[in-house]
Amino acid sequence: MIYEYIVGGVVLATMLGFVLLYGVKGKKTTRASMEITRNGFVSILNNGICQTEIARTRSTDVVIVGAGVAGAALAYTLGKEGRQVHVIERDLSEPDRIVGELLQPGGYLKLIELGLEDCVKEIDAQKVFGYALYKDGKDSKLSYPLEKYRADVAGRSFHNGRFIQRLREKAASLPNVRLEQGTVTGLVEEKGTIKGVHYKTKTSQELTAYAPLTIVCDGCFSNLRRSLCDPKVDNPSCFVGLILENCDLPHANHGHVILGDPSPILFYPISSTEIRCLVDVPGQKVPSISNGEMAQYLKSVVAPQVPPELFDAFIAAVDKGNIKSMPNRSMPAAPHPTPGALLMGDAFNMRHPLTGGGMTVALSDIVILRDLLRPLQDLYDASSLCEYLESFYTLRKPVASTINTLAGALYKVFCASPDPARKEMRQACFDYLSLGGVCSTGPVSLLSGLNPRPLTLVFHFFAVAVFGVGRLLLPFPSPKRIWIGARLIYGASCIIFPIIKAEGVRQMFFPVTVPAYHRAPPIH
Image (cartoon, rainbow, N blue to C red):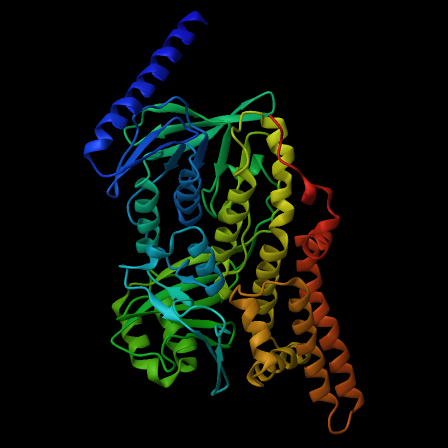
């Protein structure tokens, strides 16, 4: 104990001496500012040049598992707040994925809020201003309602790997954020509290990283989530990805959604010269890529449904052979509040990627967590912190659940079906969105993440159903049409209500009635 006081006194004396010395020199130089962060760093800013890590008095505050979109953005956010952050990522090389390439305008606004908007620069990202919807040779253009936002606010589409590398670079630029390549093998648990993680380094050295808070962001294939939540993963389909070259989309700077048979086909730009095509294949298995079955499927089943402007480029992409597939997963958030640990990103909550809402949910979650942690000086009271952070699960619900529910419901509506009632619902959805006005701006504002309100979602979903019934009953109702209309309403209810139930009715629609919503920060 005496030794600690001596060391503390020496450190304090050194710091005071440095301040006095700097004060003397300051008479001969331009004025500079000194900032002592709560982590014990001394930062001197002089003419925009920052010198850091003069003194370090605290160990790691947060261990983050995974440096994808959620992990890297979270690392930068917490690092900027002054936390000591240690990020452990299995592979720090540039990822090559076929999803996570479209950031909705609502997600871009969160990126701005986090100070990360420059991460979509210098990667040839393309602005996206809305969608074009295709069905049976007809198309309808649906624009994002961006009138009241500044000029740069729009969706962004890009190569996922390039975006992630920019986020990682941004996080690593902070002196109190450490990115390390390693494979996390398990959580360190003591008496029900998570104390950190066990991991293997790039050189297979087995180490342990300790921190009062461990945040697991290791993606959709997480091997750590099982002890922190109740994972009920659904695999409704797979995406098959291609890159089209040397062609232009019929509607520039718009995502294109073809209501194909058996399920949707997507096109959107990912650079100034490349267009991503995602073909949804229902079920958990896809035709084999290696033996040519997939190429044959794409040419015989998918190609005839592709817009004529993209047909030649689509065939050329199939012939080129760079075909990739990835399972589409959905998983409602069902956490087990655990002292010392938190789940985020796809490890915590997934929805069908049809609507491109995953990154918007992740970035929104990061903003909420940042604001919750901001008043806390330290994170070492694990039980109090765990009780306080239960509010995170409630505060995120209105936004996350709206985007999740929309993704699941739209996917089911957009898929082809032999059922007459489902056919009517699909056609009614296309025609309703094509009406324009509030019939398009309302749903598109939900899709874009600009207005993620649960009641607005339910209103428009059932407005589509009622619109479909009205079309059936006019000009003259018949018993058959009345029966189909009744089944349409019943089918719509069977689509949306189970999703809402899984998300949590009370948390989604009435979050203020949940006690955790009002939790105050622990007092130390």
